[in-house]
Structures are given as structure tokens and as C-alpha cells.
Length: 377
Ligand SMILES: *Cc1c(COP(=O)(O)O)cnc(C)c1O
Image (tube, rainbow, N blue to C red):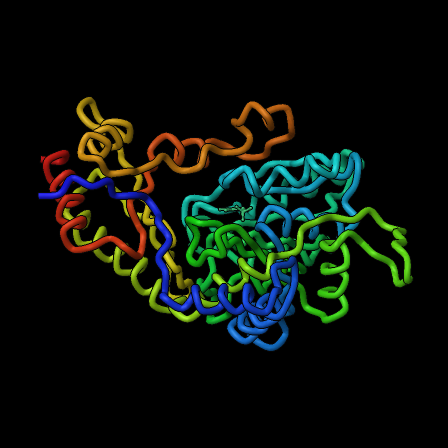
């Protein structure tokens, strides 16, 4: 029996990537921007629906950064941010010299809590500063309470940047994640649903804004025969070679989502009879998750806890990982305001992400299953 390492989230090729990458090389479009980039943007625009305008960039992080810049976030401004997330959600706030204000999760979706969000907005306004933006996250592909959160943001007229890095293909009430906010982003980092090796997109709702994003991402060159700049520029455009990989990946996007969801079903069947474990699932049929990563909460007792199970997996050469450590607990962010209780903290203490890649085979599943049954025996 093979003991090859089983990874949390590996990429998987469609076989078409080579063709598009070769085309870029053959045509000497070894550049940032180019025909593959335009095609990739079009494919995503078709996928997301008519009112979405997609600008391809070199990472999800740069997409969040440019969204903040386009919203005019600058030194000393406040930006509300879901605490339970990866650091790339919050880092761009600091790039702008702005102040992140972190919000706890609620236990239904593990995402930003509507009640606490409103309390925080009111309190920040009372303290003299209305937040300039809200960054929301669809954690591990599970949509947040979109209607409630956006109603609150609308009431106070604060724009939302929807960090949909993990949620390509997820929907809420049939509408695709990444299309709800003033801006939405996806990441195509190597471990995400689809990859361009490294890359991301910033989604807006007008052609004009898309052009502006491309302007900033290509060094903010004014119209002139010489190099003329009236705005700070960034080198954030997607490479035409990388976009070729993305075009190949788009061909199997649906298949990739289906296999992530199959992994989730697999865990569902394993954990249904284990009382101390709760599998992370959508609240009801209004939510559809790509289940980018399957995650569980383990109720600890004197014999079992999250860390024991992680170690048992490690001993069997299987990768698993604690949930994101909340931002308000991170040394780099812990001096910034935080609103809420201990929901995110508890999720972090009890939560574990399990192998969820599209490449996990039957024999790998058997190995995973064996570790779990031995552990909970
Ligand atoms: C991956 C990820 C990002 C960053 O995307 P990159 O393309 O790696 O820069 C941002 N937010 C979340 C929630 C992510 O998971």
C-alpha cells in the first residue's frame, strides 16, 4: 500500500493548459496583458453573468489592494474586515496606511456577524469616523449572510469588497459569489479552485471601472507619447502566459467544483455518526458552496481534540490544517480594534481543514477514512 503524501489542496490540470501557453510563446506574447488575458477575462465574464466586468491581475491580494485604492482608502481611514480569514484579506488595508477594524464570525456560516457588524459601524461613527469600506469573506467557499450584510452596508452607504478568493462557483440565492459587492475578487493561487500558478481578478460592475483597474495595474500611464504619470502606478496585471493556464483550467471548472463537493459528501458520510464532530456545511438551500476546503469542528474531551487528530493525520502522511487563525489574534494586527466575542476564536481552537483536492483518489480516501475511524474508535 502506498504511503504517498495526501495534500490539503493540490491543483489539477485539464490537459489544455499547454496549448494556450504554447500559443502565447509562439506568438511572442510573453508579456503582462495580451490575448490570453483578454480571453480569460471574457470567459469569466460569461461565467459570472452580464453585469460583471473582470480585470485580470497577478494575485488576489493585488485585487483587494486596487479595490481599496479605487474606493479612495488612504492613511488613517478605517476599513471593516472579517477577522476569520487569511491574512491576505487584511494586509492591503495596511498597505494603504489605513486601520483595519475586525469583526467576529457568527456560528451559522462562520462568516462576518451581521449584528456585530452594525454595532461596530455605529460605534465607529460615534467615535468620529465612518468606515470607508467593508471587506467580507466567503470562508472556504461557504457564502456569508449576503442579504443581511449588504442591507446593513447599504443602510450606512458603505461599499463592500467581497473577498471571494475561495468561492469561485459558490452561489447565494442562485447568484454567483464575487458579484454582490461594489468590488469582488477571486484568487487563482496554486491551491485555489482553479489556478493560473499565481493570479487573481478584480470584478466591478462597469466597463469604465474595469478600464480604471487596468490603468492602475499597468503603471498608471497617462495618454501621451512619452511616459507621463499623474497617479501612483502598480505592476499588477496578469501575465499572458499565466492567463493561458487559466484558460485551460476554465475548461474543467465545473468538474473541479463537483469533485470538491464529492469530497465534502465523503466526509459527511464518515462523520454522520461521530457525535463530537461537526462538518462545516451551508445553512440551507439558499446557499451553494463549492466546498473549496472541507472543514470540521471537534468538540474536545479528555481523550480527543483538534491537535490530536491533526497529529494522527500527520503520522499517516496526510496533511490537515487548523482553520485560519483570526486576524485580531495575529501579532501583526492585534493592536487594531476588534468587535465581537469568542466565536472566531473557538472556531480556530476546534477547527480542522481536511484534504479536499480534486486529485484525491479512492485509495487516498480509504487511508483518510482509516485514520478517522481509528481515532474515534
Ligand atoms: C488566497 C486568498 C487570498 C489571496 O489571494 P492570492 O491570489 O494568494 O494573493 C485572499 N483572501 C483569501 C480569503 C484567500 O483565501
